[in-house]
Image 1 (cartoon, one colour):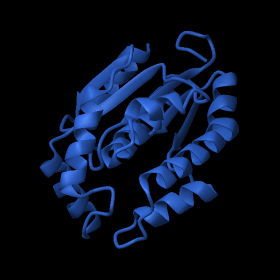
Image 2 (image 1 turned 135 degrees about the vertical axis):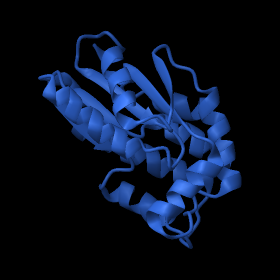
Image 3 (image 1 turned 90 degrees about the vertical axis):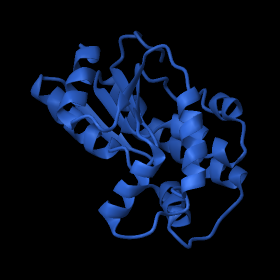
Amino acid sequence: MAPGSGRGYLIAIEGIDGTGKSTLAGELAGALERRGRAVTLSFEPTRGPHGRRIRELAGAGGERVSAQEELELFIADRREHVAQVIAPALAAGHVVILDRYYYSTMAYQGARGVDPAAIERRHEFAPRPDLLVILELPVDEALERITAKRGSIPDLFEGAEYLTQVDRLFRGIEHPNLMRLDARLPTAETVAAIVGRVA
C-alpha cells in the first residue's frame, strides 16, 4: 500500500516523549474532518492485550524485559492494529492519523541496541505512511514537559540518557515524504502546515 496508491492517506506522527504528538494528532484530525475528510485517529501501543503489556512494562519501576522481547510485543501489537484498524480504514478511503508507528519502534528499541534497519525490515506487513511527521524538541525541554504534565518521574522510556539516544535515531530517519517540525511551534501553526502538505 505505497504512497499514492489511491487508498486513503496515512499520516504517522512521531517524536520523543513530550513533543506533543497526541495533542497534534487530535487537532489535525479535527481540522481535516472540518474540511470534509473521513478520518480515523489511532495510537500505539494500542489498548489490545499486547499494547497493555507494553504499557505495564513502561511504567516507572516496572519490570524490564530484553530488547528483543520488547520488540516482539510491539510487532505483535502492530500486526493486530494494521489488520483491525489501519488497513480497513485506508481501504475505506479514510485519512488515518497515527500517534506513533513503527518509526518509534526503530528509535526506542534501536536505542536499546536492536538494529533499526532490521526493525524496519520486520515491518513489511505495515502500510508505509504517505506522510511522516517528526516533532523535534531538545531532550531537556521534553523532560520538563513530561514532569510538568504528570507531576511524576519519567518512566522507563523517558530517562534523559535514553531519550538522547532515541532523539539521535529519530534525527537519522529518512522517508520520501517527511516533515520535521519544531515542537515548540503553536499547535495551530503545525496543523496548518500539515493540512497544506496533505492538500
